[in-house]
Length: 304
Image (cartoon, rainbow, N blue to C red):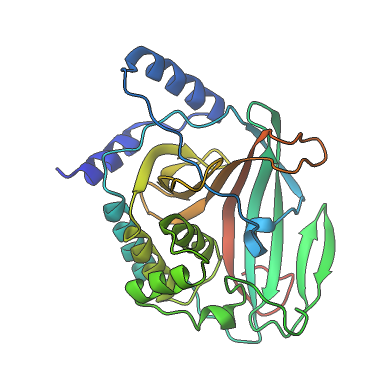
């Protein structure tokens, strides 16, 4: 039996538990079994995110108890094997293909705050024009807020509109080279970060999502974390990357379903560098985003 199959078997045999119970149990287990070898924390540079990762909508509440960094070790399961399974799953069940006059829909839960605090995740919905020619819509605090079409000349390092995503290469090697070309320095970590951001899009061209997973598999020092929770408490496999020497203070984890290998969301841990309302400069912060639904609609405000 290969290691990935064994991991799936173990996940299937364990009944889901609450985030608090899981964190407490893992802490006790690690205390009892810890050896003299300790893990160096993985750190990622903090980046600004747009689109789906920047949702702040709030129409529903999900309680979440943030207990700090998940105390698990990078697994021995090869990240390439997990990402290849994810690519195969994306090929077997591709994203829908929208028309230019339609809207991309996403429903997500998001939470941001200091580890150890108890608060609530916010759930919201968003509709974005496929070609950017129409006004979009978001639901925020129970209110409908119109998203105006993008300004002429508006620029994003990573494409966000579907018509722009169509222009990206779908060969994994070419896609990885393209991501490296967006960076000032040829950085493995930066390329991985961009690919993770690309995969966070709710709808991608059918060949692009598998290519992005396979491109990620080619990034050196890619690791798998077992039993990572998303903001809703779903258990998943975490994909992350060991830090490069010039970076520090930040870690990003892409969370996949351990059985279907579908995208569940992201967890971004960083140190606040500027300070903001309720958060002091230098305080550790966790941003969590979990995808709850995605699809294509004919009109903004309609369900897929």
